[in-house]
Image (tube, rainbow, N blue to C red; front, side):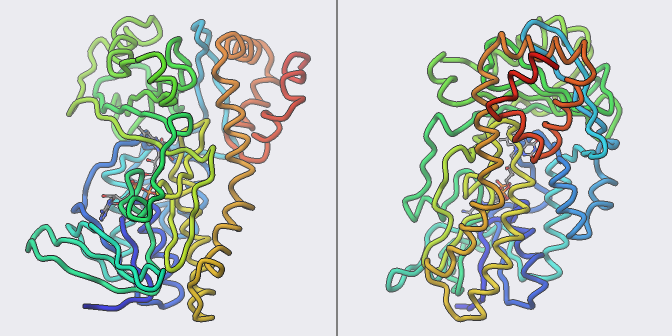
Length: 402
Ligand SMILES: Cc1cc2nc3c(=O)[nH]c(=O)nc-3n(C[C@H](O)[C@H](O)[C@H](O)COP(=O)(O)OP(=O)(O)OC[C@H]3O[C@@H](n4cnc5c(N)ncnc54)[C@H](O)[C@@H]3O)c2cc1C
């Protein structure tokens, strides 16, 4: 029975970043992870400007860049009618880094500041007097059951969070959830230094993506769609993805020599179009466990890293004042509200706009012809603040007249 200031369940981007941020405060931190690194996580592997800025703060941008695609300079988009356009991201840029590599980089660094145990699956919470005070779990190597006690327990354990489940808070309403499928392909032709988002008929709201990786011709290819629509249309996403690769005129030639490695795999994305309770007596949630994925782009790594940064600062304050009650830890939830929810709300409006085939066709056609529209869209996709403009009530009128 060991005791810590903070116990973090899950060593994905949010959990490892949490350990790194807490390291600055010299706290006794335990990071528990059920898998062994390096391990895969189903994802698009895309790192946006926000993720890069937060990695830079953790001193990890260079290390990640070494294992990534070349610098991503823009986005290629196609409309349901097949028309295409390129929009630059400058002055921002991104990378695509396979999660097997990315998460290992973060975890290795987190090991320098926290005690870590791999192969430890948390199975339950220990609660006393209305507070979460510890976790129970099983060490997969020794098959031993163990308990650990901490002043704050952090649920950084992703979309199927055991911490949220045990607190009765892991609800994923289908209108606020996306299903995503991913495959790694070799020998894909026509990859550039741009990520590709294709709004394909039958996958709205959602998109088909092709993201270049660290070797020539190597790509992360996937498809994502709002779960409510998948259920409504009884859509078989795997079949839609395979069909698009073989039959769609935009892709079929590019995939004619391509080889799928290790199958197409799926995972859920709890998106931030609804707020999930993110703090209580002795506990908080980060990243996907807090349902912080962008509902329009499907990006969650940046928000996972940001939630870890905010949480570390606020938990430190709570520990200093010796008060880890819900009221005290809600400082974290309030900051999430201020720093993230306006952006998540905007992205939800954009997701609903992207449900309309005619609108996507119109906007993309227009951007193809008018550089001012392309620039407007580019800025909006790459930056959170201009994105707000795009979802505002006057944006459509502006797009019509630009
Ligand atoms: C198909 C798909 C495509 C995506 N594409 C992108 C993209 O291109 N860019 C982007 O920014 N985001 C993308 N996302 C979202 C992104 O993957 C997540 O937002 C991100 O992984 C969240 O990080 P996290 O640390 O909160 O959770 P996770 O990365 O899920 O990490 C959770 C960790 O907790 C561990 N764990 C779980 N349960 C337990 C337990 N009981 N005990 C101990 N450990 C446990 C897991 O093994 C895992 O290591 C995509 C998601 C999907 C599904």
